Length: 220
Image (cartoon, rainbow, N blue to C red):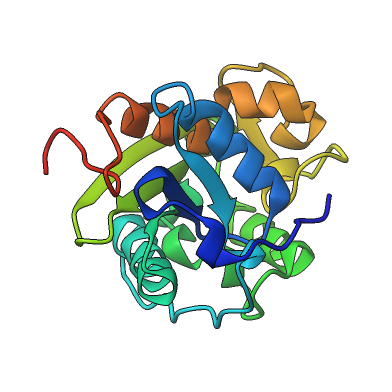
């Protein structure tokens, strides 16, 4: 699904939130949840407004990286922005891969290599000890610099082999607690979105929102 280009000059700064992504599906997911509490706000993807360089995600936590990406979008557009950072946290590996989930095996976005490394490191881990969770933090920042974050998690276990054709990343290895016997990659997009870590993070954020006069929130 392609994103249409938008002239930033046509946007109302007080009624617009930029989603720091070029992914149309992520834009739709975020808009579907937040529009329920912000019905008069228009959500646009950063990729619709031009070609912007990705910021260096050098934070050591999901919160730090989400804020880094949101701040970069605000600086690039002068508009309120929302960004997320997500990853897999495995208890038996002391929280790995964590914030390095996308580049666990070295190359950013190499899902096959990342999954292979995870399975290799967990070869000797007993089934009962393969607990893990997907974590997500979303950060909303207004043009004045007010920051609000939401956090979500999806609990589960790590399988011993990959299954399923949906999703991406570690989805073929992750067995959500809410869907016994099925990996995340065996769930339809609708099923996944209903239990996902990003869904829960957006719900957490939406519960805190009031109005957007540049994304004002209860705590700001």
